[in-house]
Length: 284
Image (cartoon, rainbow, N blue to C red; front, side, top):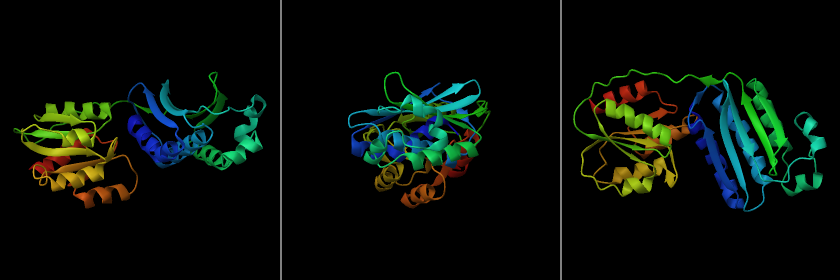
């Protein structure tokens, strides 16, 4: 899966609880994008539980960060909070006993032991490693390491049968994904316009004829499903092919997008050959 898409999806799961508490929630990647192999469902649950704990122990006005990085071929996700940290004498046994280092603090924040226990079990099932340390700047850092999980970038020599004038609209706030799609579509002979959110798409004033739209499932100012509903009510876009791209598991996201009016659904990380075949079918 793409690291950026994974971070975006797990941040989305915890954004409401962070917003309700007044805690900032951010994610960073170094390098800015990479692909890796992992059990998507287990990893998403494990990191989500750790983020939830970090939000609980960070006071109003603080921030929680999800950072993804590489250590050789190992993939590492770190969850950093601005809470009280963990007493040094409790660190060695924290991930084996799951005891709360301060029972009063535990009760105040609704408990963190269950989420930590589940995260440890899920990481173990993936043959990964869960570690914890205190940050010099204050707060705690939980890190999930997935050994030998990095995937080499694919070199895809993909061609598309459909040619001719026309513009493809790409609606995706993740810059690396948008660039990948733009470069491929340009190679296939299309003009490309990219939009980071629904608002910029609504404000589009270009008169260039549009052939199709690639729509991300989660946007900074709303959902891709809501944006598809709007497109189907706009005279300029109502009859265009719309390819709905999501990083979600299961059928729920697909069903919502198709019910809103999407022409096709592809699950991220999407391969260029899948985009090519999909556009071949929709535009031929």
